[in-house]
Amino acid sequence: MGLRRRRRSSASSSDGLIDFDKNGLNQRPFKVVYARKKKPESRLSITIQVLAVIFSAVLTYYVYYHFDHFHFNLVHFYATKLDDPNAQHALGHKLLKKGENQLAAFHWFRKSASKGNPHSAYNLAAGHLSGYQTDLSKGEAKKLLEFAAKHNVAEAHQLLHDLCYDKPEFCEH
Image (cartoon, rainbow, N blue to C red):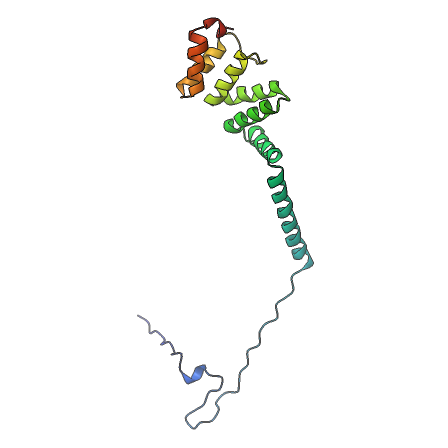
């Protein structure tokens, strides 16, 4: 084991500014520590910081006052670039709610349902049975409703019971 140096106590005479020897004479000269000057930040650094603050303020304004547009673009990004079935379902809802492009809405419901989203399967079948233009083949609406009912979509249970079992001619087309 090596020797440890003993820590000086906070009250030692060597911590003062002037150090005296046994005779009371000054051993070392008075030492002054100057504070270092801080270098000013560069113009590039300041410009980047100002632009970051302005960008944050503009983004906050956009998200707060134009949330529907922001959310639509965010969902569209997740649906197209990341191929997320929940985002595809939400995008189908947004397009159907706008009423602008119903064919595109059911396209997104189809993509989401093909990845196993039961709510999209229900919406695709219900839209087909409601008379919207979809790409469903004969008998596919019933299969989609059964899939959604199997995954505990309450509306699918109700629609299967009311429409398909009581009036089977509606589910066959």
